[in-house]
Length: 248
Image (cartoon, rainbow, N blue to C red):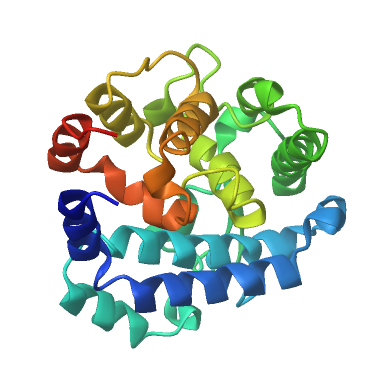
């Protein structure tokens, strides 16, 4: 590996080994509790009410994923807290479409689902997640963005990620089940910045952009021993410009 690139990678990942270990532990607990083969059997309590619910495990993984770009003091503060300490009706979980409110002692859900009950809204989400998993199992990655638009789109007039908070849920779920196929970047704006930095097209939906970035990085032999967690570090614009100037 080019020594300049190697030095940059070591600098970026030196504090991340422990963090990735914790994220992988959460992911392993997630797939043990909620195996993809049984996603159709997921109950609303499994989804959002249990202390180790579907949403709570994903959220903890996402928080740790975000902390990898923050300072280690913030990271250590989070690690001192169990995921059980996150209140179920905090802002962390409102974005999952259906969530249990400990204040109201009842389920709340996005009214944009146009469903009469939380159960009906939850079933819509679950159907979308199952279809995403089924499509990956069948190798039909080209269908994923359309499935997101059909089942997780809370604003029918737009496919904008910022106006459809459940889009991140679809992609995060796929990463938890298939970390080898998706890079852990769930924000469309960040993906656009990365793709632009590499001179790649930003056309397509959230999942298409995620796949395009990962597939491009896999072309380089320098990444042959990298997992997708490590590849996400090539989201920093300085590294993009440095990398593009390298003779590969």
